[in-house]
Every structure is written in structure tokens, then in C-alpha cells.
Image (cartoon, rainbow, N blue to C red; front, side, top):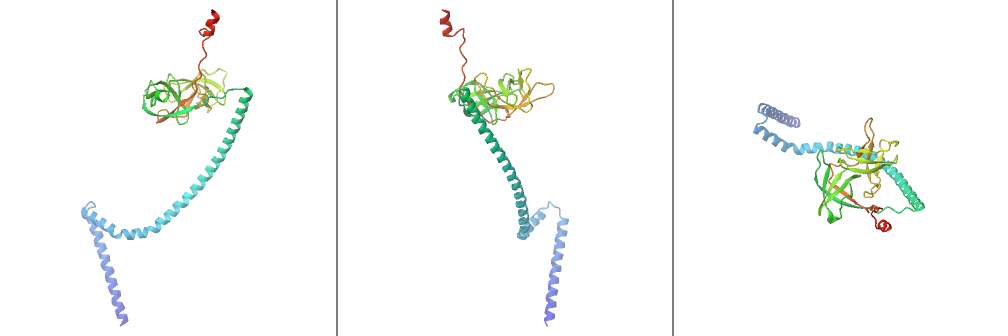
Amino acid sequence: MAKFGASISETRFVSATGIAAVCVLIGALFLFLLPRDDPRVMQLRQTAFDIFLPAIDALGRPFIALRNTGTQVSQLSGLREENHRLLAENEALRLKINEMTQAQFLMQQYRALLDLPPEPDIELFPVRVVADLSSPFVKTLVTKGGKSAGIEPGLAVIGTNGLIGRVISSGLQSARILLLTDFNSNIPVVALASNVQAILSGRNNDMPELQFVPRKATLKDGDLLVTSGRGGRIPIGLPVGILRLGVGEPPKVELLDDVQGLIHVRVVKGVAVDAPPDIQTSPASRKAKR
């Protein structure tokens, strides 16, 4: 009797399996015959997704966990390499700081021995660029902030990394900056490695040129150029750019900042060095002539 009941249950299971297989076959054929953009097919597909989504989600969780584990392992490997790189950079920065500290101490000692006056302190005043008036013939910027903020013509202007120009005019609330790339820009600079002084002149392109270089001067490609302080208006030592030497062409300078993509700049407020009075027109000379 038990065997007979078992055979009946097995027959029912086979019958149910066969019916399910036939239904699946009919459904597949139905989906194959109907066009894919048919609304009924789209609705049926969406219904199938809604029905089988919990099962698909449950089956996909182990694979997602395995994938996340692999991602974390790869990230740990990348973090380990990044940590080694940062440690090396940190060690190099420590050496640079030690060198700069030693150089600063030696500079103080040399100044004390030579009885040199200290350089005046400078103040950086951040301003926002409100207009770019650059054209093929003029390279200028307009900034917010003028005489009301103490911005006067002649002051140096730096970007994120180095000098970009100088103030040529200022109103009450705005100022105009002549960029280093402008044809009318001429800034005295000095090359650090070779200690060669020259004039950085704009040529209305991305790379200004060095002019009035001494004939016997030896320039080095890749040397850093800084302001020499000649003229007394622009402070000494402001970074300007990298020297690029070419065959058969004047030395050019790759500026440290992209002067066309600036949003904020900083005006360098320093103590200007006044020119000495003319010996021919000074009061002492006039009294001596009398």
C-alpha cells in the first residue's frame, strides 16, 4: 500500500514538472513570436522581474560579497603602495626642510656679518578675477578690489605658484593687471642656478622671452627664474617660471601658472623703494650752486 502511494506522488510530481516545462516552452514561444517593443511583452518582462527579483537578489549576494572582497583586497594593495610613496615623499620633504632651515640660518649669519638690512615684509591681498580682457594684442585681467583696498599701480600680482604680472591701473573698486605674456611687460629676473640677470619680456604668446642677457652668460635649461628686485617695486625672490632653451631661438620661459585660467590672484603689497632725488634738482644741490 505504501509503494502504491509513493508511485502516485511520483506521478503527480512528474506531471507537475511536465506541465511547468510546457508552460515555460509556451511562454518562450509567445515571447519569441511577439515583437520586442510590444507593450504586452514589456509588461510581462517587468512582471517577471518583479517576481524573480528577490531570488535574483538572494543568488547575487554571494557574488557581490566576493566582488567587494576582491575590490577591498586590490584597494589594500594600492593603499600599501600609496603609503610607501607618501613615506618616501615625507622623507624627501624632511630633507628639504632641513636644507632650508640650514640655508636660512646661514643667510642670517651672512646678513649679520655684512650688516645688511632685513628685507621688508610683504603682504598678500587675495582678489577675484572678474574679467579677462586678453586678445591677440593685449594680455590683461580685471580684478575686484582697487584703491579702496590699497591696490596701487606697480604692485606685483602672483597666482597659485608664481608671478603672473603687475597692476598697471586701479580704480576705486577694481584694478587692471598687465600679464607677463603681454608685449608691454618687462620684468627684471635672475636665474638661480647660473645667477644671470636679464629682463623677462612678453611676446603676446604663452612663453615670454629673456632679453638683455649678458653675452658671456651661461644659461641652464630648466633653471628657475625669480624676480631680481631691480627697480624697487617688485619684491625680490618671487618665483616666475622655468627656463627653456632652444636651438637657434632666444631663451624662453615657461610660466608657473596658466595666466588664462586664473579665478583668484594675490596682490603683493610690499614696501616700495623710492628712487633717490636727482642730484641736479635736489635742494642741497641748488643751495650749493647759490
